[in-house]
Length: 261
Ligand SMILES: CC(C)(COP(=O)(O)OP(=O)(O)OC[C@H]1O[C@@H](n2cnc3c(N)ncnc32)[C@H](O)[C@@H]1OP(=O)(O)O)[C@@H](O)C(=O)NCCC(=O)NCCS
Image (cartoon, rainbow, N blue to C red; front, side, top):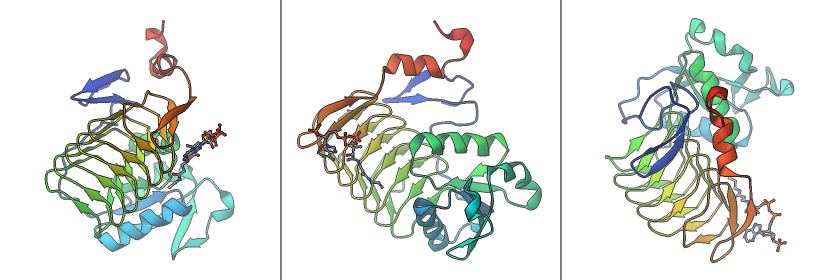
């Protein structure tokens, strides 16, 4: 599904919230064209992305962008922090065609991804060579698959997803846009994780469960049943401890003003 709608759309089993015409949930995996690229975010996660890109050896990382002025002109693992996101309009004329957001927070990552696309810069993927991705997996754009991550047959991985170090995403699972699956988390077969959800470090989600959009699954939790959108669940078995807002209100917020009730 690719379109101009920003309404919540159901595609197959997934619920996505599109932010504009250019941020689609899936793209078929195609051979990556090598390009010069930047990493947005020069913090800890940005370094993980840098390492994955270097080890993968497809794209050339020419710099970081970060809004923290104290980092500007400094080098992170040998790569210069060029400046803030204000440089986005100048990237292409300087031969930089690609970017990836190296920020763990799902909302921030989504917003910066959209800015990148708005400036005609492509979102590149970083797939560490020690990750295993089945040949029939569909990977979106701006995706990190970190070292030791396993992504099994027929999974669908949306734009801006982080599959962090050593996580497992088992067969036919569907991961929506800008989801973060933290290190060591395990998703069994046919799990659906809707857009913006956060699966904490070492959490386990059993087969066929659906984790609602923007939900948070606490570290080490074991999820045995569906998780409501915009809630926090923790523990073994996982139980709801927080309501993070009204999903309907959230949907309204995403709609163009003319369509709001
Ligand atoms: C789930 C989480 C987000 C909750 O944070 P929070 O919204 O600030 O919630 P609180 O800390 O107020 O905790 C609410 C309750 O849940 C409990 N709780 C929080 N996290 C828990 C967890 N992972 N397992 C079991 N119980 C947990 C708290 O003890 C508290 O219980 P109480 O009300 O009986 O005192 C956080 O604890 C967590 O697990 N974060 C994941 C961190 C992570 O994976 N980092 C990796 C980054 S790559």
